[in-house]
Length: 370
Image (tube, rainbow, N blue to C red; front, top):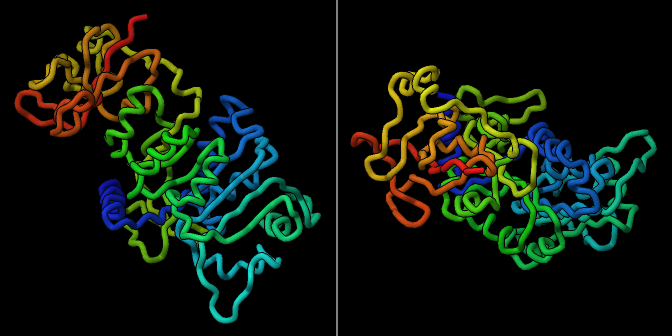
């Protein structure tokens, strides 16, 4: 029920274009630190752009500003896509200069731009915090806060100008605009680390990049992302939905993941496998052990229902679950295509059928010959 509830909620959100899913700090920290562990200089001297992040609410902004010096950033740019009323209550904290004209009455909600070039413990309390950021934006001319002319849409001209400056885009983009978002990143040849729904893996725009080894999964999928903070107006679906100790409303889901073109150590780890005969003899899966592997009715490939049941010595094409991509090592396997839709072309080969029964989506792979 919990999994179905969260999945239905995200599907419903995509249809209604309700895109306010705020990533938890712990999930951002866990993922980004994995790239730093693989290469401590990943972000050194680079510009990170969080282009779907209200800095008053975004944990992406919070992570990168609090770790700015440690990871060696040159600059952090943050723009909000859907401005939050929280910003209007905190303008006095973050802004006190002549560039922003204060008006009487209720201030207009605007999209915001933050550019951070340096950080430090300004108030002298011995630690760097968001309060220091506020003081620096007031006192440090190297840093900048300003309202955007438009609504902060990542497709706007002013957002694209900021994108051109960036080395990395790291954010949780709107699920309803995911295809357009990743297309833009590819068009401008940017390194990125973004969150998407598992269904996005089957989008032609995404799968083509995965097949060409231009994009891959981050360091985990499923419950690797522990949940999203949602506004009070959102329903809390599923038994794992909760309100945390800080009063945040959390939607737990197991169908979201990180997509990236940043290297990490996990994707170079070979998948340990048994031979075809050993799988038939010893597999822990009852539909493999003693049964073997059937061929698809509509494609010349064998059906492999579990990633750990991939035979190490089979030379032909195999159909594997989409979750295989979490274990995919491009030096070990080649991706041939996918079976996920009725449309048949050079990438999609029609839904998989075995003995007349339609199966779930499959990725078609082949063992690389070294």
